[in-house]
Image 1 (cartoon, rainbow, N blue to C red):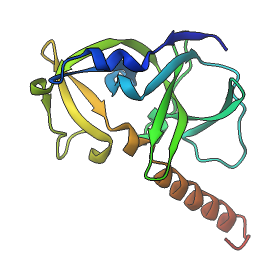
Image 2 (cartoon, rainbow, N blue to C red; image 1 turned 120 degrees about the vertical axis):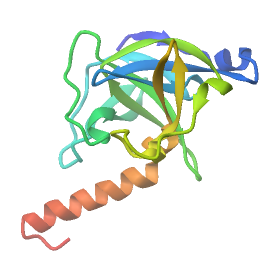
Image 3 (cartoon, rainbow, N blue to C red; image 1 turned 45 degrees about the vertical axis):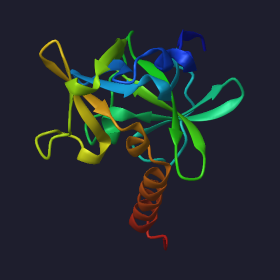
Image 4 (cartoon, one colour; image 1 turned 60 degrees about the vertical axis):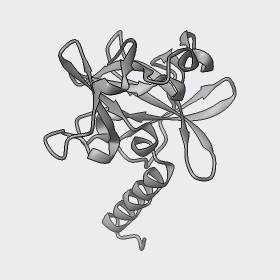
Length: 182
């Protein structure tokens, strides 16, 4: 796998305290953003190994320099149809922080756009309704050129505890439907 973009950890430190940098990407025709400090790198989509009996939103795992990294389809995680693969489909490698430790997770996106600097006063709180994803997944709505960018709360979207609970529920549902005690 070749790295398309290697994001430096210091990238966000150069921004002023009232501005933060975000990586923007497309997902199902909508623009989303993740804080640049959570991004490790962006790689081409490919070389996935599917893991049997995983929920629909887990595409599989990749070998990233000797480490096993789970790959989550963000579109499916949001309850939408799975991401259709195109030339621009890529995997964004993200570091997720939980109460106990850090985990590296890949997320499938339609296309990566650019890194934007968004001032704090240009970020509105998440809407109480109307968004087609859970409000706890949204950190805020960034205003960029009179359009909104959905800024994701990546630690909630890819919460290791939440993903583990969903996996357990999926496994119990599968074993129950097969007549095997869960």
